[in-house]
Image (cartoon, rainbow, N blue to C red; front, side):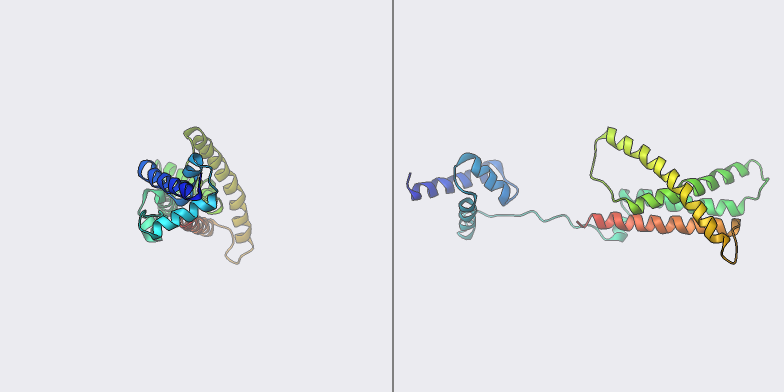
Length: 205
C-alpha cells in the first residue's frame, strides 16, 4: 500500500472514529485509531493536527471544572461536616457555662455535650485537617472508613486533651474549667477550619 493510500485511509479512519465514537481527548482518539490501523502514534497525532489546521475536524479538549471559592464551597453539602462540628462545639461551650451543676435534668445535657467536646470533636477536627479527602469509594469501604475515623477521632482526642491540660497547668492562669473548655473550643475550630480549607484546595487539583 502506497504512502498516499495509507494517509487517505488514516484520514478516513480518524473522521469516522470522531463521528461514531466521540472521543474525549486526542489521546483517546489516537488510541482508537491504533486499534484499527498499524500506524505509528506520532504519525496519527500529526495527521490529527493537520486535519484540525485544515478545519476538517475540531478538537475540544475538556477543561477541568473550576472549583468554587471557599465562601461558595462552604455553602455546599460537602461542607456540612464543618458546620456541624462548629455548631456542636459552640453549643457545648455555651451549655457548659450556662447550665449550673446540680440542675436536673439539664445537667445530663451539659455532661453529654461536654463529653463530646472533650472526647470527640478535637480529634475529629484534627483528622479532617491532617488527612486529605479520598476519591469516591464503594459503600462497604466507606462504612469501614467511617469506623476507622470514629476510632481515630477518639484516640486523637484522648491524646490532645491531656496535652492541652499540661500546657495550661504551666501557664499563669492554670488548668480549670474556664480555661480548659475555651481552649478545646479554639482547638476544635482551628483544626476544623484548616480541614475545610485543605478539602477546598484539593478540589483545585
